[in-house]
Image (cartoon, rainbow, N blue to C red; front, side, top):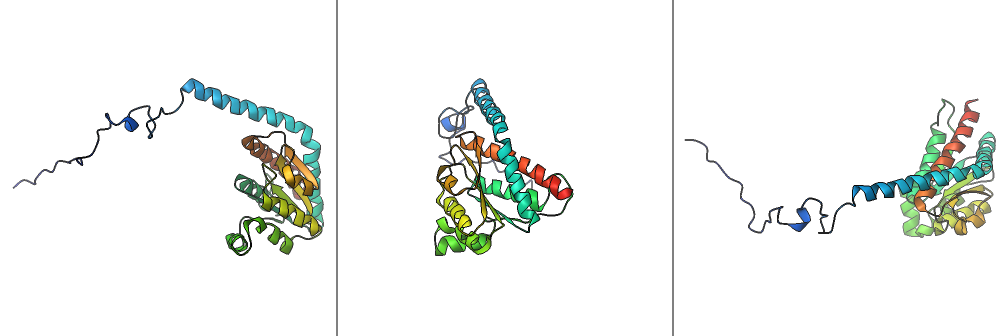
Length: 228
């Protein structure tokens, strides 16, 4: 006897995609119009490129400050100091990026350099946030670790994150040198920064892009020094 044939049955409340407004071609799931026309999207993306180029071009004026920050790290590493980096969200990623370039390497095979990112120990971070407050997650670590001869580098797009501001203040109290990767006027954190590296923009994406450029330039000089 041949096997029975079972035909799929749609649920009684199923709506054919051709009749459901959210499933029609060119519509978003909420029923609104989907992606902007290709010409409009291209214009938006082109504006992003132009804004990036403009901000990157303005970094030329910051080259002395960037080189001074690299020299500061070289001086610290020469005398046994450690770099501590920190930030929130995308800025935490930038802080980890710089640490990776130093502990690993940028371009050259050379000795590892002492750098630590204060966002990477989940146990410590959550302990401090839970038992004290999130505002203390960096400052308490710095109070425990940073000493004269060390460098503390903070990444922030606003410059006003309370945990970043308190971290830099604590670093100065402990005798460490502070570097601020910021934007605009640096916000409240600028008050506690010994070295300012302020991206020439007030837009978060541009600031983060310029931070990456600056940390790569710093890595280039430090990398060459450590490989010599």
